[in-house]
Length: 188
Image (tube, rainbow, N blue to C red):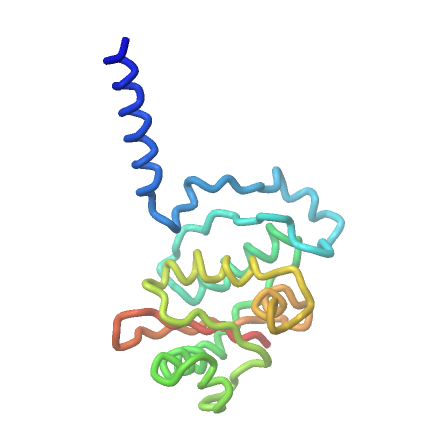
């Protein structure tokens, strides 16, 4: 009996150890509450976002600018029944320049220094991420998760993403000298 008990204890210890080795950013181990359908959006936008709303990212189209706008709109629709923002293609060149400038000078430097136009009315930023895919999947989700709230210093990214003041968004991307990806999202 002691031998079998020792085997069971060893197996449990091994499984516990394997659990601890899972990737820290893996969503596979975090249950999320998802709406069963979009019918709840028939009554229009929700006052607050659905709690713990984290829809799986859409498949990549191969165009990160398009994928970025699609992810923002996915979060707006699935999490708060908000209408989509238009893709602002005319702002993408400036957004790309701002992302490159910021990778050398710091957060929001290009926006604040007015290095190009049209720059938009508000900006979110994902500085120094390991890949474009992680920007689209994880950074945009993290910014959405800052809400709800009214204090801009704490909830600003969410406020920009969910605001009814803006009608369109331009996403920009740049690779820094260290290989990290910088991205900005300019709202207009």
